[in-house]
Image 1 (cartoon, rainbow, N blue to C red):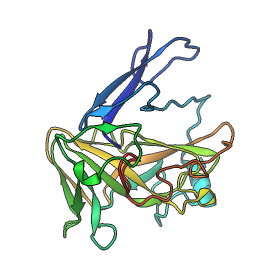
Image 2: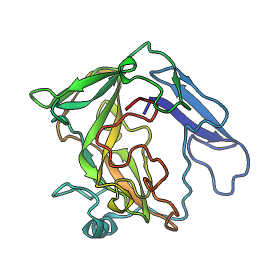
Image 3: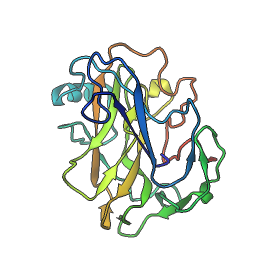
Image 4: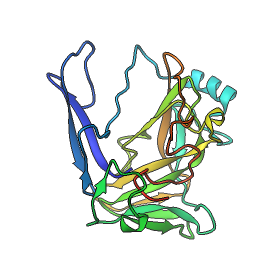
Length: 251
């Protein structure tokens, strides 16, 4: 959530973020801060790897069955065709009708190992809701916004945010798209959690409207239930979140 674009590549592979079965060898990270200067050290965690066996993603029928059992979203009539549709919340949260943050330019350094060590006002501008519940994304600016829906990930599943349609729209949503088992799950301390969206516009201004679908949450079956779920005694930063910045900023 600090706009650091990171991707991984391995020797003799044909693309980023894909590692061929049976590969043995080093991995390399391309790290590209887009907004803030960052300080990293040996051992700093900037990327996440997931291992899949076979086809783990749930199809529409399996996703519907899981939703009927666990209620994955508080949307009264969710679209589950290609995953759970996720819309943007531009109506505002709380008494201030707060919808999100826009990143400031030319800020100080963010130490990725320092928790609660940076003042929000030094790095972010709060955004209030407009009367028409819209938001104009300025070119090449970075925003933190929230989903309209609250979602949850049951213990035996993981989820990933994917583009609604990569060929439509002049903006990109969610660089860090992994949702761990237990995210927003009531049994792990959650009551449904908003998907906090990392949004970057491209070359032209783009208007978002309240409820506009910006991504889909696809679910995958875990090979086994994790010993510890997201939010259960491990200091997970975003459990039961509304609209929350990364752990680097003071609450």
